[in-house]
Image (cartoon, rainbow over all chains, first blue to last red; front, side):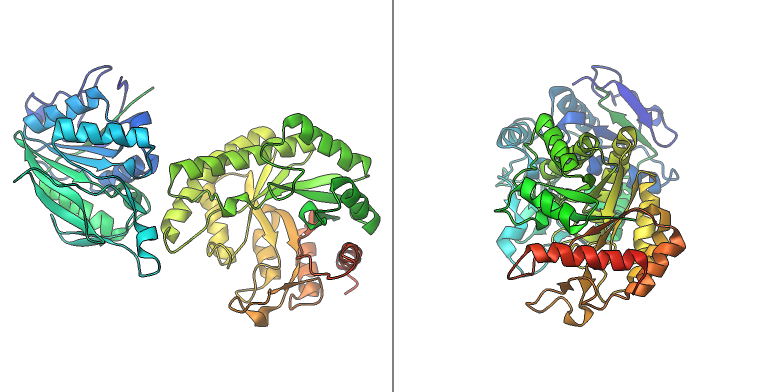
Length: 233
Length: 279
């Protein structure tokens, strides 16, 4: 993946250049604090990128700390440079929010998505589930988040549930309809947050509860202003 | 104002040419073509075949008033599935392409479908984004997109001010409203929609509505002109007030048990009365 175009939201410049993964090993004071990694053609839901972008911009620029946050919206197949960026962030103690966009993916894209998550990040997922065909008319299948705060956020029709994780490998932080759909786990010196139910579209549509939960998550990460890096092809 | 009627009203066993002759004989000036709803005009219909349709229309002494479609009920612009959304966009693009081929400058789009599963806020935002983009395509083609007020059917943009704000958010002069005076039911008054939207009206669908039936029964709320509860003198006055001089397009349900062609004649005559103001 050639990441060749940068656009910055906020006041801290990023350091993404063509063909290179994120390099966050240098002192975080000088680097980007919140980075939105747009996977371009490997992003399954464009509106999710817009949702995170809008929500991050709405959080303002007042909070600063030594923590770094990388957000990867609606990922399908995650190309090696992006995996490298994620791993690099985690090694240096950053938090990575990795949102699955594979609910509506083709079988091929889903297989690639699952393999990367399993082989590189140790996250085990199951095939997408159509929530509404399971439930009939019994009600709205809200996603119940339990960390960093409790929240009840609208589903996005299809979820990528978590499979059985290795012993001690993380904590389930959200459920929907009895399915575990979000995970927090320590990886390297950082934290990986995996969302199997897309949050970005709810942010994009202005869902107040989604924005509250996300705001608390970001503030909890104590991160500074945002950079947005896009695949410029 | 000019009168048209949809080709989806033509009895399927009649075929397009015989239907066109009926439309002309009944006194209409044009015909609305429904992409995907009639056998002769499908997404798979090639450009050359579309041109042939135009020739047939013109040979019958008619013109194409606009290109409509019901395909967005199954493939809405507001779908969560990106594949469905891409198909919905393609449908609109094909409508624009065929409108140009057919010599028309307007299309009808059902802009979004609120369901239990896909909530209003998502539908709104997705439709604004989609139509802003499609508006650019339409502008380049010299075509206007009329979003139909389907009110109760799509549970979206229920009031005229809400619809007005929606068009403001789309911010494209190529995107307006295809106003259906029968779709408002008991949630408002068609004449007020006409006054509010004025120059943003791309086309007008005509039918009457029996407001007392509501939407819960097993009988249709729709009926032929002058048989329902629409205030036709008020509608006619509002059209005059806003200076609407475009197409009036009959969109009825085919309700005649016998002599289905009679509905064309009756509808055309009723539309003449509306246009002339003899109400």
